[in-house]
Amino acid sequence: MRHLIRNAGTAISLMAALLLSPSVKAVKVQDSELQKFTRSNVLGTSFEMGVKSSIDEAKQAQAAALAEIDRLASVFSTYEPSSEVSELNQNGVTNAPSKDLVALIRLCEKWQKSLPKSFSCRLGNVIAMWQSFEQQQQRPNRVDIRKTARAAQQSNFSVDDLKAGIANQDFTWDFGGIAKGYILDKAMEVAKMSAPNANAIKIDIGGDGVYWSSLSDNRQQWQVGLAVPHSIDDGQAIRLGILNINRGAIAYSGHSSRSRTIARRAYSHILAPRDGWPKHNAITVIVKAPDATSADALATALAVSDISVALDWLEKNPRYAALLIDSDGRQYASNNWYQNYQAQHTDEQTNKGYQAKISFTLPKIDVAKYRKPYVSLWIADKKGKVVKNLLILGQSERWMQENRSWWRIQGRKTPQLLDGFARPTRRPGHYEVIWNGRDDFGQSLPEGEYRLFAEASREHGDYEKISLPFNLMNQKQVLTKNGKKEIDALTITFN
Image (cartoon, rainbow, N blue to C red; front, top):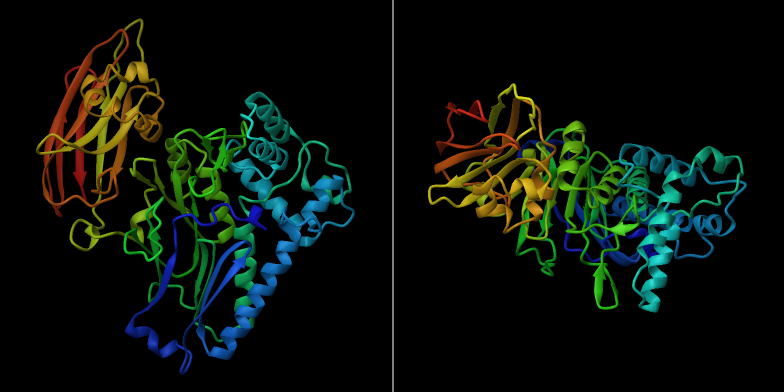
């Protein structure tokens, strides 16, 4: 059963409480309160459910949800020899695949097409190889693992082949990165049918949750506490912050809680489909999505993606919001993450909802050996301490060292910043970055004096660094600083 759990025991501890404004009283079920249920060893982890309804109806919803979870575990669990997917993997063929198996494989194909290097349900053989190396305590053979992973990714086998009874000899299935989300969505469906008078329902399995409210606006919301990665504080005394949600799902993907230890070295259990290997400098990912299936799949995929690639994908897909956290605790959020999120401590007191647009222009220089410049963009406080890295154009550590100010105070000390902020170098033109008034660790900065820096260097060209002082305050203003060589203009617009 644990093969359905991507992050059992990880430090999310989604503590959810239902917030009701006074205007909601007219629609609540008469004499009903939030009924809470807990159970252990559901899909190999914890189960929590809340139903705002009468006690009898809430019990019916819980029973229906648990029955649906058990039914779907018999389809997707790779730990159960008699499950549908286990028999399929053993025989390579099935004559009558269930409706749920077909549906989930279609969803796998959808996500693999959208994120081909980061998501796959085809890693069953690769996972088996890792398990064998772990049991024998032998160092993993990266060449063989890569070969097996690529064969699975390059296979043309499809769900239509499965339905036609064609044998699959290219790979075996593992739905650990998406099945729990699918099960959560199905459990919510049957719970709502079993409690037609309920005003709100939440189901949490092992730290991933799906939430529903009868009101589509913000008058009735679940308040979900997000724990600090790697923390063992299940009491939530220390947490990242609180996410408000009325309908949708949250998934949390972390690498530390279920790592494999082989020959005294720890390897993450989350594998990159492109080569079957854990990602170096692994990140923690929290995803908010309209449904639990999407949240589960996306959290798995982003956990093995470069941070800059993940953020660029999220910008193009605003239906989803995510917070990514590197091993040092630096936070990288999609532009829409903070719409319903409050970071711990600071948001109640400072610049919640603050936003600034930072733009810069790279000039067109007519020379024979023109190379696109390497650019660093950051914000420092009045003492010169870097509080927020905004952008790095250039992915070569060798050439980023030419931006000597940024490299001296940040780059050489924190090499993972290249993974988090680096994008390919750009041609001459106008570019924009959005800043939400927070530092690298997600905390709102207090009002005061700051300075915006832009630094550019170019192979066979010049070097330039300019800075723009500003005062962080809740008022509209536009400030501009012109450059002379590699940067035409640097502008910050406060909204």
